Image: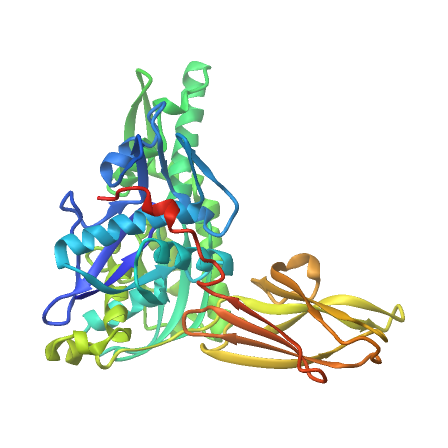
Length: 496
């Protein structure tokens, strides 16, 4: 029985486990590589994965899809032949394939840890957990991607690191930056920030648009997207990390793109990442000089301007593992073994991971909509009251009292909100759950309603709205159970 860590990426995914010596190692896919394109194509009802699916992405008439991780937790759907899929259902198909990859190499998978971007919304986290469950994975724990990367770097160093570090995680679709305190293999998150839609996918699009513009300037004609696809742009992007310019043959024309032009095209994204780095330092109450080292994670950190940007913000050269694409899954494998059933590990494996400790922080603000007094107008107004602040140590449990506002009030409208900043205006927060708590009739205003939010180590919430006088309550679990997905949608497809 094996423990695995899975990095479910926007453009590429990977699986890792620990070997007999307790060291994290990548698991090869059917093609012999360690990174599997996060793409799915169909031939009838048979899903295809890996490079074959990636190549089909932009072939006219091909039933193929990719980069669906960016839409996790949304209502977006994808039509592939007679089948309609949500992002979570596609992710579940991909996870089911990755599970098969792991079992072909290792035998039965006992437990898995799936990584999630630190800046993912609650709906996206829920959808990811539901996708893993529908794929048949036993996922009891999740871990944020930059935290998993920090765990790998700490383990790789032999447990000698001590101090405050930054993890700069720039992959295919998301960007995270976390400030981490390390003491050996004890990993404590001090602050985290990021952007849910910023990464290599945006850089690919920037090159595609640049080539389209150059083609029109040269010929006066619009370039058909099929003549220079996102896949083509991705390959040229990789070349520009090694060379100062590339020449692309596009619709029988030669188009040159320089690294300087590419860097100008993505400069707003780089600036956005820099602003998040500065913000996370402020949240942690630190200066760049307080950071002992910056660790890289994610394939997009190979782009030269990214390294230059990090040096500019932190005043030092970042540290990159030999394969930055895999550090997240490798760290997740360590965490899976650490949190799993220790009786399934050998003595050597247990000794290897016994000193691991991970302490996360909340990445969002969670609150509720309540009525507060507006003294200037002499009336009440709705406001967002924050219960759990961003940066709280996980797990946490917060209870606050609110009060009914009208005589004879027979219900309370309960709303759970989420926001990236401490917003008090309801217009600027997202309501992630809403329902009514029924109250006894005939009571005066001012009845106490206690609200409890409990946030667990899997970054899932349990909420309770309690009418103190009657003991009537409304309980909500924003967790894998709440995001349960019909696995029959996935089970009807044979995944190999």
